[in-house]
Image (cartoon, rainbow over all chains, first blue to last red; front, side):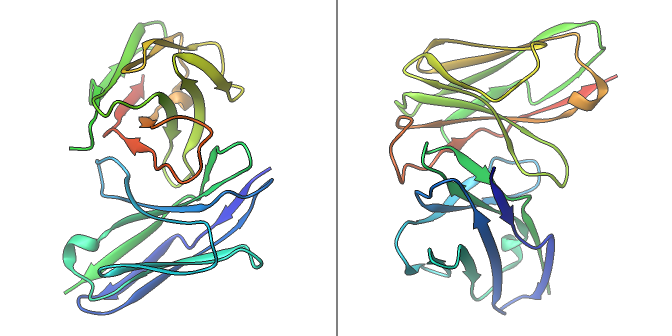
Amino acid sequence: GQNIDQPTEMTATEGAIVQINCTYQTSGFNGLFWYQQHAGEAPTFLSYNVLDGLEEKGRFSSFLSRSKGYSYLLLKELQMKDSASYLCAASSNDYKLSFGAGTTVTVRA
Amino acid sequence: ETGVTQTPRHLVMGMTNKKSLKCEQHLGHNAMYWYKQSAKKPLELMFVYNFKEQTENNSVPSRFSPECPNSSHLFLHLHTLQPEDSALYLCASSQEEGTGGQPQHFGDGTRLSIL
């Protein structure tokens, strides 16, 4: 079976940095996705990591350690519009995605 | 605008009703997916279609019946649902199933409430 763990909620101040951790256990591994989902809206793709290391995309970065079954999403210079749920999803050998329950990030002024 | 459109956005139905959810993608993708999203729970994969052929039925009860007439359209037919089926139903598409690194593009979902 698949097991994806991420924190339920996080709160941070506008302009700050927040790191959302995700640990995974899957039958085979073909990469790790992060999605952002605003309330009442579609999840939207943020990043994909398949090799170890840090991928940077503007204010958002994602890190992967395959040996540790661990990833994080780093949100820098937080803005109010970053308040959303962030979903971690691991791709297994059959390329199916297993999702975590999501981390709700609240950005306060 | 994600390129994946779901209708209706909201649906309230009784347990004896029959209704259908519709999904249409304008991205030229060949794989389409149905997911169920319940509060505080991970997205649950229900069905996968790749080039119009069903490749996954994740032990979904028969009261949910998918249909994929072509690569751009996906339906979920509902009948005799239970209160625990109340959830957000998300449709997604990707270039094709079985290729690594291809992100799935999601619609806004249908919020389903069973009375």
